[in-house]
Length: 457
Image 1 (tube, rainbow, N blue to C red):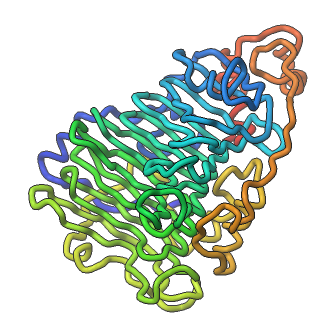
Image 2 (image 1 turned 60 degrees about the vertical axis):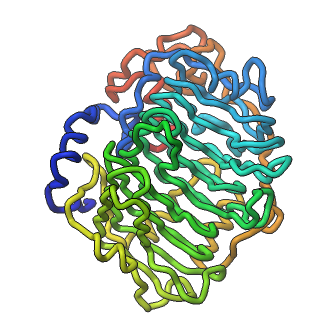
């Protein structure tokens, strides 16, 4: 059984009030096994089941058409292959993008234009699972080509994503006009962000930027990074800011082969509380000779307190990445500001750091449709190989995802024929109510189907 972090929450009156005003986590999460601050992203329940039937960038049956719809919905995939987008797909509220439903090799999204291919902006209650999002160089120099951006949104859960080939960071949480909070990124692979590519600042391979913000932002926090693998990103592994909205928790992640920095934590936005627990940092072939500490804190605003709770982290000192030399977890400022006052979000499993590497490598990314790019990144971590790259070609380029269709859904109720044929209470030739409760599982029929494909149950 996973360990829980000991201790109570004693962060003073302001932070206590912030927690008291925050909405409680729901008893029924977005799917079985959903954890962290984003686990209550459930506003899509009861919505329409929409089939993605084409790899076209837009139009009827496209991923864009479902993601940008203005209604509660579940997007199920009846096609596999690569979707090439010319502009961002903006995921609107109350959506579940169920990549686990894609046949064969799954769905890969890449860019033929500029900007981030998948953005969740001004939205709430969004779940995105089992997709590969790999933009590549922008068509012209651009400072904001991430793989995925979340902006001014709440209750978002990203799970089992494979993110690669961004020219800014692979994952960005941004607050520009309002509140950004209650977000989980879990079980995902963030690798091969491009260094010397089309970013106007030159070398710019980045992992994750959490709570970047503009002047009109009112808060950013209550964010969980849990069981993710970062590999071959120059820095921002991760880069974190926060506010009195709530803490940012970085728990049971693996960070491999940066060039210059692992975790960078700042106090620019507001009162900052960070939980850094059970993580593994590993230098690799790209890492500078003076291996950086796992966590560096930068005090840039004297009016904003910052506090880090650090426990049971494993840091290796020098390549090869799994030597017996212990590295530095906390840099000097982080040591001075360390505390044991912040605890994990309700129900978050925490595994000992010594077990994380072996348990995580086989489970991150789009494991249902594993391809050679993800295998390359994982093997690099296993065998201390690879390096930060400038071009997708240096990592073998985009994998070829064979186009295929299926499964058959004769009655169009979102439940495939073979699924219905195996159940006495369903008829593949007559539309059933996908939101009726499956008595054996206690979930709706459609949620039972999604959870079974995903391995949640």
